Amino acid sequence: MKNIALALACLAAFACGSSAQKSGGATSETAPAKEENTKSNEENKKDNKMKKTLILFYSRPGNNYVGGNIVYLEKGNCLVVAEKIRSLTGADMFQIEPVKEYSEDYMTCTEEAKRELSQNARPAYKGDIDISSYDTIILGYPIWWGTFPMPVFTFLENHDFTGKTIIPFSTHEGSGLGSSVSDIRKLCPGATVKDGTAIRGGSAARSDAEVKRIVEAI
Ligand SMILES: Cc1cc2nc3c(=O)[nH]c(=O)nc-3n(C[C@H](O)[C@H](O)[C@H](O)COP(=O)(O)O)c2cc1C
Image 1: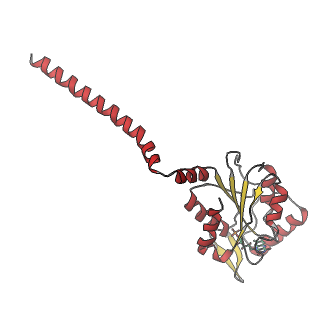
Image 2: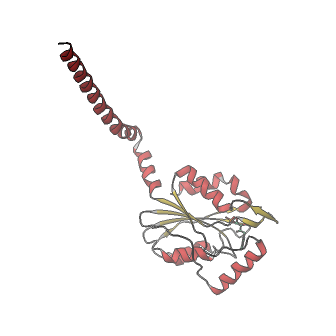
Image 3: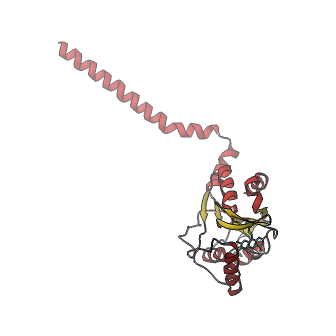
């Protein structure tokens, strides 16, 4: 009799336990939906937009010309800006990195870049990204000899930007955006290319106002 009572108690406990688990499972399954529901439509729309936004950029650490001096940059200026954009948006990032690295020495790098520009070269970049699921591309680059580095030309030519919106930004030491925006328009004829934002390289770490404007353009 005692045994039957024990068995019944165990069954009851299991039944309670399993129903608690079920409702626990259901709670944890429905919890995110509840969380979503607490967000306004505007917030949900913004989240979806950010999921479809890619921060695509080029940046070179090493010796560079900043405010009249040659300075060693542990982290390139465009990377600093790209990270600020990511911290506001949570958007994916892809860095265009050349297979053949440019010299860390500033003067040598300017010579290498000048040669490539005059040859209209298309240097290869490392890896790749499928951009088809992104509607908006924030495209950041340093100005080299008045436009973006040649590996960015390679990347833009290798992908189809038709129907996408491109929001350019540059970091520079006096040229602003140079001819970069018109170069993007030539290379990506099917895209809507917004007016770009130019940021002084030496001000990259203090570019919150410009970054806000870039993000507002999404
Ligand atoms: C090869 C080379 C060419 C450059 N040409 C220009 C130029 O034509 N105009 C300009 O304003 N700055 C020029 N700069 C300065 C860079 O645009 C500037 O330092 C930029 O912030 C670098 O960004 P990064 O650190 O993300 O690579 C040049 C720098 C390099 C290395």
